[in-house]
Amino acid sequence: MEETYTDSLDPEKLLQCPYDKNHQIRACRFPYHLIKCRKNHPDVASKLATCPFNARHQVPRAEISHHISSCDDRSCIEQDVVNQTRSLRQETLAESTWQCPPCDEDWDKDLWEQTSAPFVWGTTHYSDNNSPASNIVTEHKNNLASGMRVPKSLPYVLPWKNNGNAQ
Image (cartoon, rainbow, N blue to C red; front, side, top):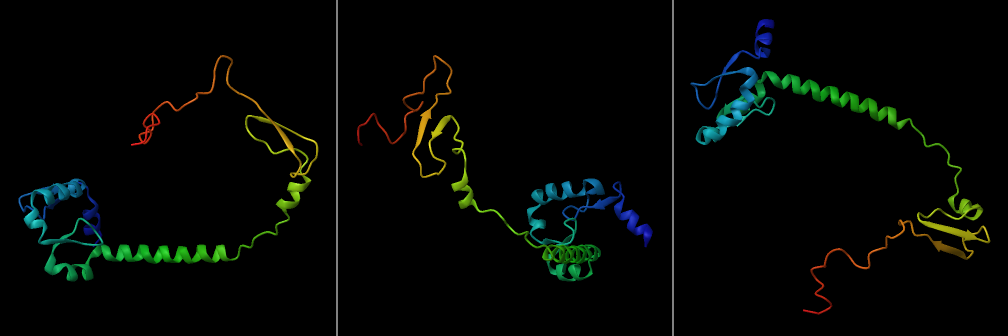
């Protein structure tokens, strides 16, 4: 049994193409060959079904249920599903014991106790009072280099605008 298992993993092992019985393909190239040959032989491809456990298994449609129940790769997939389910249960248990730490923050209170005006990029704020309700005088600062100016219009014409004329 071990010889068969190692033999199936041998990348140089020759496999017969299910689409053309004259094709003998190395195992390492077999998936690529299947795709190419499936396109070249659509009549044969329509009569074959792909195994859900191993895409290399191309089986006549009439025999797919029997193949699924007896496929060697089924046990590997089922074992993976069992392992994933176990690890998911363990993660769920670990997460369920976590508790949110108590929160001492009060954003509304912090807003009223704020000692400086909020930061706004490109502006300078002056304030007489610390409350947000106070009048804030905003001085706009131009960050452009000298000799540069802000454009008065967009660099392109919008399709729905036709020089101010309605269509």
